[in-house]
Image: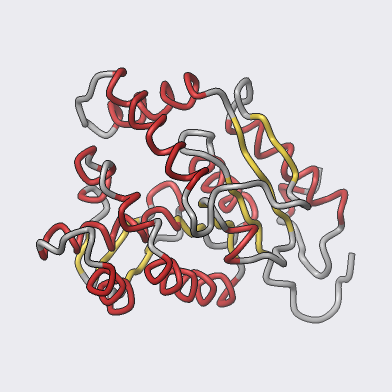
Length: 241
């Protein structure tokens, strides 16, 4: 592994369906690697929130694309676990996680014009200082030449259970059946949409997280990074073990 010159700005792309552990793992991995964590899902949620606030119909593709282009989305905080989301200078961290908004995200996320604008923003964020980026099309569209691509999967039941517990932790009361239905609906949309459908990149490492803890998943990823000796990137001392 090269030791001279500037360290490489590592890009780790994580794709997978809702509840597969992408967000929690990406946050923990970014913290270990000491590089930014970019939650692309939060960015689409921010656009959805603005559309709902403005009363823009989800059938109005041009207005939704205009919102995506104009939106100033910022992800702040050095600790990925406490990352805060801002839209045009105002915090929306909690507002974008309510079930009512979650049900509408797919209307926005599936639109080609919206995705085009989001990809531009995501690439700029990643190129600034490297990133652990997770979403639905990171390894296939946003960063097809990422240093490391991972594809997460887990059973629908396990993914719904994880999401259910997450909502309860955030103080959002919802029944499990509703969450399960939401997971199934999001899967149908993610896998079958015409623009950038969720799929595993040919060179992505498949990781079944069904029986893995976040820590175990992160350790597996770090082992992959070490074994590949990614050009110019230096792991922190605590990760050289």
